[in-house]
Length: 236
Image (tube, rainbow, N blue to C red; front, side):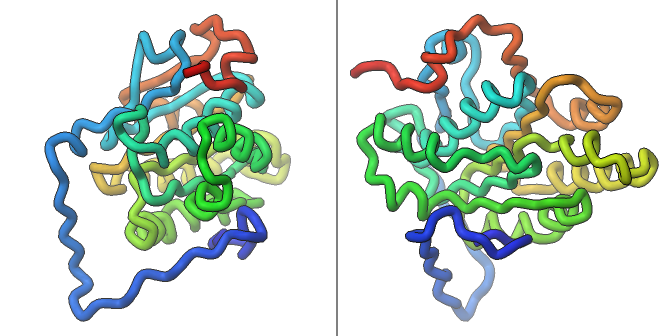
């Protein structure tokens, strides 16, 4: 369910609310194997250089088309078992700041991996926002609640800066203030959550406010990857 506009990822999407308990304190137990879980891209050209782990804050930069393909692939892979390079996450929370999400591509990846499409779509919680104020409100106030409610291991914020750059009514001073608040909120998220933020070309004057928050940066321009490798999964 989208916190900002109330839309659903798919007509079939029905998310059961967690059963209330008398004690609101949640104690999460993890095995050593779970703590070391790694999320792979299933793309040899990237996996040979880097993988992702829960607890990391990662910034992916590149063309909108290619970065979006990569993020959509990670949506699906995060739901997969750890033995297959996934995180075994019950849900994935995605905040679409650039109105660029491609549900059909998500379905395509799920089918290629032999997954049941409906449960996959039910497991992806997609929030579309349409102003920088909605974006800040979702990340600062609603995101911590969503993480706890849906017990997710991965949060994705796609095309973070699009509205800041493309909306002519946005004042630079106000934009910088909101971005700082957003970055503070991301830093406060649980340390066992993988957070991925994407920035699409071209670079903007706000990039430096974002880059300093992330220890890991993946620049797609540094990889020579055929688009077919981004769209198709390797044969097993």
